[in-house]
Image 1 (tube, rainbow, N blue to C red):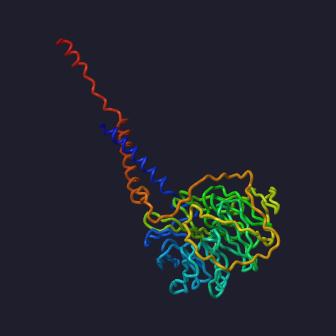
Image 2 (cartoon, one colour):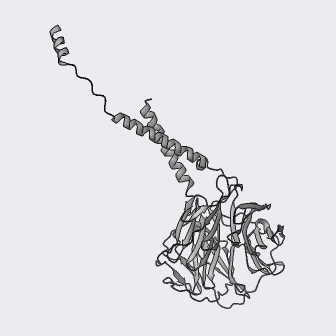
Image 3 (cartoon, one colour):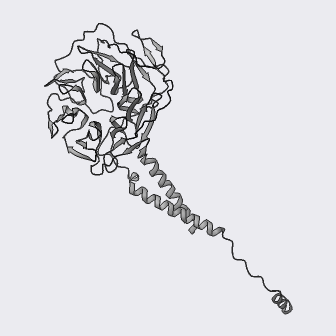
Length: 462
């Protein structure tokens, strides 16, 4: 093989491998987001994150609880089960909940196991104060703490993923029904009411006020509660959305995944997308300039992202498609409200739907004895029925939701040192080719002309 051909082949190979590394690894730094240093922490799946400030943050996941003190992340506890959510009222009053009824409490010094209230998977925890805490999970389980934990709802096939409220008398819980549709429960201080949407399962909920609430779910579905009804918003993606958090009605973030991860940002116009190489499961911030997100680990450490820009860019407002749903089920087009309306108390739906486990969730344990305490709805009106937008701008595709697995194979071509070696090889090969081209274009030495006398001499000899 000629030297030129050999070097050309090396150059082609280096280009191919470099492209593989670039496309496979994704962006480590994008739109103000950077990967935090977690080199001292083994790779672990993280499902949720919460804190009291930017230097007091907790993250939970598969058999691990991490804490950030403003300087570094460290493991603080290794529970025997998977944890799905973390929340607290102060740095010495933090709860973590998870699989098979796992419940942990942190008092500022150590974590105590307080499991035993239920055997159901607990997906979310939230409250308004130290003596008013809620947890929700599989089989429609809702637990309440007012000095002691009690079961206030359960015994059906719903899976309840997220909790949020503006106060103790206005609480929402979102989840999935047995037909894999979204469900929204509302507590008005007296009774629980329920509505089933026509979207896919809803996974997270957050609001800037009682009159402006967002719920996110599978296939990129985003619902906004305004003017007493839930309205479908265009997210611009079909990725599954797991969590939502914000600081105001014009600064909201949603985290999600399909094969890779993304974070959506809403600042008054359309939702803007930032992509990442790994799925993102949870998001929380202490302010608009200090936001954290967690998800699937990288090759050698946990994945914790941070947004620390001092200012969030503002996107010029653009009309956002929306529809409103009247109590009789009719669909009326409606422009995006320019101001935040007041909220009416959602009424009660008399027949709760049932639910089968969505494909993204682990199989809930069998419940042998359903809870006996079920609140009796007192509202006499009917909850508005949510139906999908007939001409939705985003057509969801049947995408299987990947289930995190700590034993998943790590893609070797994403290794950082491998990428450095490939880059060095690429430059060496490119330099060799350039050197050969320059050498070939160099003009040959001009041959010396034979003297006229020597030519005449040769002619005479002939």
